[in-house]
Image (cartoon, rainbow, N blue to C red; front, side, top):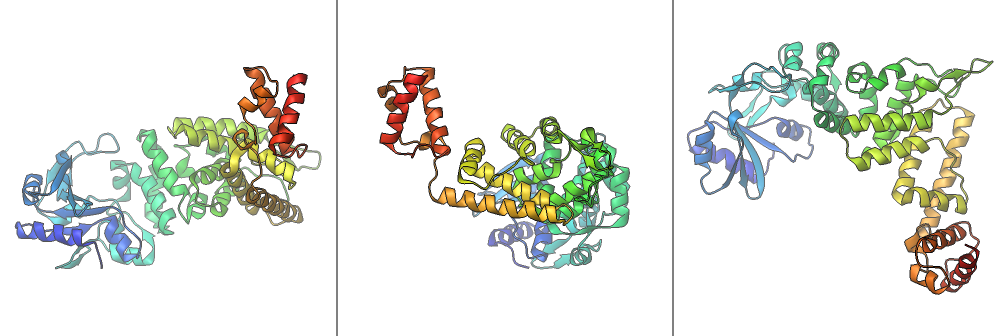
Length: 445
């Protein structure tokens, strides 16, 4: 086990001060998995005031003094050091009303959520693992410590944290723990929107997010009730071999780990339940589900207190996810004008994830080939420096005024008309040609 020198130094300082010191939690788990770690935690039998005294001369921040945590900065690395504790009663489904400091390491470990997060390591004493966390880590299993119903009743956020860790680490969830997650799911409504959004975003961006989401739709319904009608809704189409929810979960698995794309993939068909119709042959159609889905996405992400920029982008992607993407230079430039380069590549990634999550029919293969052609044309246009924004034009507002446009709104109308002409290939993006066109448009407008 290798940890930064600052961690070993902190352990030595606490030991010299007469205390015990163990590296604990996620950093130990990640070290066992050979994963990078960015947050380091130590636990000790020393009370917080003694920890502060032990680190005289270092920057010490009383991060959560009431709960026994101080943050010590050593060689530029922040380290959270927490006194062994026993949690009191949980009344809000999130935090204990009070804590009682303890001198027993096992008391402290017993109050934690999952066995893999209750593994301790000392550079002197080695591992302390009273709940079999090392074996669970090696087996890729998430298991609660003690009674999982009690653990989730104490802190409902542990339900999402468990799902998120399963997605990030590609672990399975032990049966009793998963059953308790389902039984306690209604408690998630007591968690703040910001916390829910943060855990969901990290879950969605995990490598195994698609698999985890496919198996936990019912658990997420209290957080996103709009998912409920998607679960089990058959699509009545030869191009779909999953229900609506299963299709959205699969799309997440095929999407790049970009939060905007993953959120859009997860919710791209959330508008389908309200738009289902069957034709005379019994085939399903979902006319208007894009617009309906975009409206629901805006509602969902606003309720979760997502950043406004994410709400705007994800709802935009959902609204556009099934629109035609013509693989012509003009078509690509028009899409670039609507979305910019980043947005267009996100839309293409969403479209690919959506199509790949369909049944593999000739129609789906054809659509994927068309998408490939569109992306290839887009990359060629971008590499050639294609003009698709006003600030990319070879002329500006001053030039347009000199060409005869009246200062004010007319300048903007002329510039936008010039950009349309360049995008459509009617006029090259060259100063002389644009000035001549501007003079004509100023006279016309």
